[in-house]
Length: 125
Length: 374
Image (cartoon, rainbow over all chains, first blue to last red):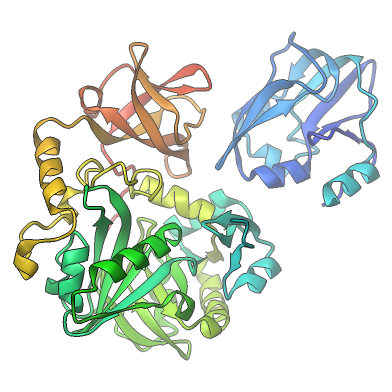
């Protein structure tokens, strides 16, 4: 498993893309997707919702369990990935690409987001 | 207790295959190797290979082995033909289920009892105690067997290529000693997936050789290694109960809709067996005034019910989910639940499952969800 260098990562295993015009894309990492197993249902935040860094903003159901989806930053949701709602297996097959979850207009971000190398070390420990 | 988990004879192989391991009843077992959904579909359409070495084998030998089992279990095991197997249960005197079992009659005076890993010690202790007055020896054989299962429509063809045993003559719920890939094995036509298939009891030292031979023989037919995650969804679709979920010491076989396993007409021990009195009352209650029934539920939405979730109707709790999962075959979440008799008829309207505060509509159906074409 390799974590893309251009992304930043939360301790709850979400990734955050580079910010463009204040907007970044959010997903879960390959490590998280692999730990969950086959994702069968994704409840994503709706466009217009305010999400808060470190707080639950949705859920992902897999065969064995349900997991909260945590927002890695605070802001307003500007897009949710309908492709993942229609086919949640995208989270497993392409967690860093087609399996992205939502886009957020950032108003605040915590200082403890990790780089790819830091996150790789975090998950190895 | 914080004992380290036990490892099967195939542990190193599972790690080589990249399995995600999980603690199950004190054993470190493969949960899945890749996608559990793909593993599930492989068993339904082609074949899957399982390590089930955590299951607990207990052997009874001696002239009164069958009679002892008639007394200790709810079934009529002295009447079982040599070479056949029976699904049965061991109950408390009060009727509660201690475990569900498969019993094989290996010889006139030899039976093998296969218990769930989580209950193997309880079953061993109960059998030892209950058999004390009979001419039989109860032997703990847990360390002496590894158990591999080949399940799915391609299983007979795969196994045939590795054995001279008469598989065509081997009926469902039968077992015969033979040789598979040069390895001595008890070949049983049993399983927990709802598909045709075999369970192979072998010496632990032979397990890896057999696994590799089955993999080599089966890969071309689509056989894949399968973990406990898909085993659970396979048995759930097939409506098969799991101890600790549908079956507990708080339920009798009749509560679980499995009263047929209780044989009141035994000819040994003057018809007496542990739990007889309580089970007679339980049978009466189930026939006349059942409190709850075991039913199937199929989701209309996509959120997944889990064990312990409440079943609701008209705002009131009318039952409890005992097992739930997304069904790869149906493409929808499914559950098994105990539901008040008034809401348990298939097609009952207005039944929902409380999924984290949201009442999700569910259809009540008869079990099983899936039955293979024969």
